[in-house]
Image 1 (spheres, rainbow, N blue to C red):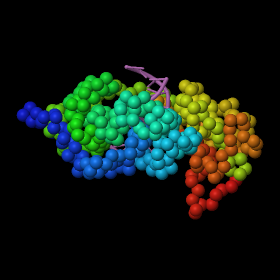
Image 2 (tube, chains in turn cyan, orange, purple):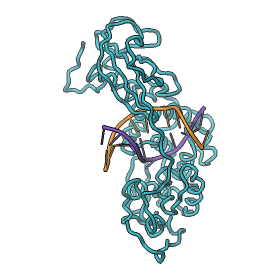
Image 3 (tube, rainbow, N blue to C red):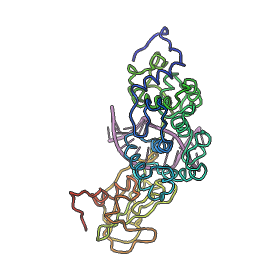
Image 4 (cartoon, rainbow, N blue to C red):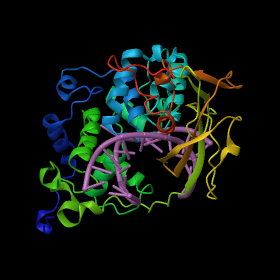
Amino acid sequence: MAKLNHKDAPADPRGTGERLLAWYDRHHRSLPWRMPPARIAAGDRPDPYRVWLSEIMLQQTTVQAVKPYFETFTSRWPSVRALAGAPGDDIMKAWAGLGYYSRARNLKKCAEAVVERFGGEFPSDFGLLKSLPGIGDYTAAAISAIAYNRPVAVVDGNVERVATRLRTIATPLPAAKPQIRAFVQSILPAARPGDFAQATMDLGATICTPKRPACALCPVNGDCLAFLGDDPERFPFKAPKAEKPKRLGAAFVAQRRDGAILLRKRPETGLLGGMSEPPTSGWTARQDGEPGLDAAPFPADWQPAGVVGHVFTHFELRLSVYRARVDRAAPEGCWWSTAADIHSEALPTVMKKAIEAAIPGATLKPTPNRQQRRN
DNA sequence: GAAACGTGGCC
DNA sequence: TGGCCAAGTTT
């Protein structure tokens, strides 16, 4: 890492924003939900519905993971009114696999609120946006700036990294947030708040990365205190993460003679809230041996079918999977999901893993080339 | 302020 | 392999 002396002190910080915009004009990423800077300059604005939807999907989620979901949602529900009118279960099914399912629950609530409170038009005001379900500080600022070009500071994880490096802010997150927000506000170009927000995020995603940042390519390295006199990779400062506890549980995959699989719906709140699953044991903090057949939802010829590992945000799960052939009506609260339906159920990834362990191929989409198995 | 809340990719 | 991280919000 280059260490420059004091003669190379940062240029006028007020120029940082303009330099970021000039870089963005040339090197911006092309994304499905983004209006490119040339069209912004021509007077176009992005659809606030698409901005909102993309921002919710992008919370703690990579661009690559979001792309296909964004395409699915916007094709199926082209407007906030369409989404507000959709059955909640359809939204959960379409969200399955993307994670953080409270986002999907809040998505419908927010769409309904926009229709009822604002006549189907997203507000531009930060405070009004933040009053909507699922919209916090970041998302309210992002919609306000990107969709409406309001001069608000948009601070996400990328911007936190860029800002703490530019100013060598050594206060650990999240305590450093006010400092960061104030700094970003101070360099915000008044004419192009939306482009500036996206420019800063693009810089963080492609140049000012967490590990091995490409400082030589950075358009504002001359403004960066970390680059000029420190080690950029040290920033931002964060508290060490707590160790993940390990939990054990069991899943019971019952299959009917025609191939249908028994599912039920999880409670609306909490982990995987509102999503579907094969019957499972609880998996609270138990470490005293694998859950056994006493946790089965009903008596059957349960056979061990392997163990599935899955890492959640705050714990690791080892799920013992059992399988049985069952020929009976679905118990109260459960339903038989046929081979034709199983692909479109609201199954979280961990539950697809469990079903796959018991019945390989069961949750894969049928292809024209593949014969459906019927036993 | 701290904990809950998913998943997949990268090194 | 396992820890880190990704356009955070809610309670």
